[in-house]
Length: 560
Image: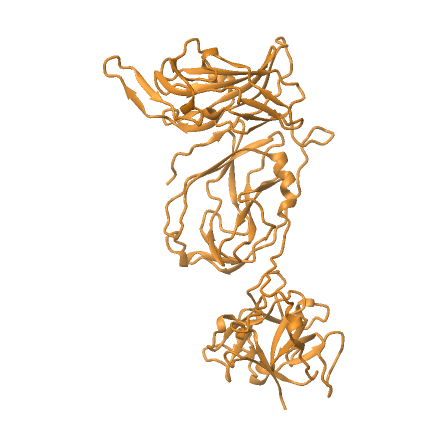
């Protein structure tokens, strides 16, 4: 069920060419932030309505001068904001609209107040702390006064008819025409506390058209378990993913944008706090340009759209959540990101509140693309490199060996189930498997050769300790996943001597061996120390703690 939103509708920033009125120039305008209407009381005698405006940080320590006269009114707001998609009811919310113009010797900030009652009290407009910053030059333009003059640096009230629009004005020294990237401070009633205003015409090529980006490429997350009978209130029905597109740490909700001819890609920096955490994006999320035009979310790249899902990773991971929207036209230079308030659901820390981020500059977001390059995770569990704590294991190339887990006594075997995944068995093939799932010959299941990298060995009497391939009699080679994340189910593929993901280092300590992949640096791990038949063999980061790393220790026995 959708609920009303407080939406920052930003309208087009327009550079107006000088015409007959050479002293007037419109710089920018916007419906601004929509705020809930204050509570209205009715005078039973005079039938007048009164609303007290919410206090700002300035109200409590400035004089309240009561009702001020001579406030200009606007008869036709639609003429000022022509072409606007005006769809939010003004009886529920009030738009804090504004307009920035050059008039004579002043640059004027018009602050429009839609009267929710006949009398509005407790208003604050501005004072000398109301300034405009030119963000390119660093020059600050301090306000000089207001219209009406009496309300400058004061708390005041206004009286008119409910539904009228008042034009309260703050006067600044006239800004130069070259001032394009501005920020307004010190106008808190209109939510202008470092509020960015841009006259930027956009990134253009020599022809005057905005250049488009190519379609961005992101690392594809791995689906561990698909959603089964999805129910937002049943976390067991949510899909499970791992191996997200990791990035360097960024401030939460930092964004980057790719503007293509067919779609708009918006990447959002998202923090992972647990090994497994739920997320959700998309749905009715929209982008609003300054004219109020909406651009709908088409989906979420590599993840479910408008559904909760689990992501497995590491606490402290930062990853890119990429939303795909309708394409933004070339002339759009800024937009508002709007996430509607969602439906309640049952989960720890559940949050279905909406979100509005206003005045996002496309120019800046495109510059942020570099922040979202893939950055692989690096986990340090011990100060000393693992290989320095142990010695290389010596094996006899060409001879058959069995690989036995120290923790469970299970032997590592070969299964055709799930794309030739490596599995751990005890002394027999578990029942209940078809002929297409398990290799028929029991000997082939449990017998492996070690072939040194860079050599072709059919047999040898001497022992070597080089990096090696671990192969079956049929020359299937043990291979780690090449998608950069831990927790991958090991597989066997046909031997490829140039594939670094099939090359392993055998590190021995006190008669037990850790099997480390040369390409990924991860090691062979019996997942969860599971002793049951057909338990999975994964690759995980090396655990140097001797009290808890038995799952990663193997005993290699040469067959006689």
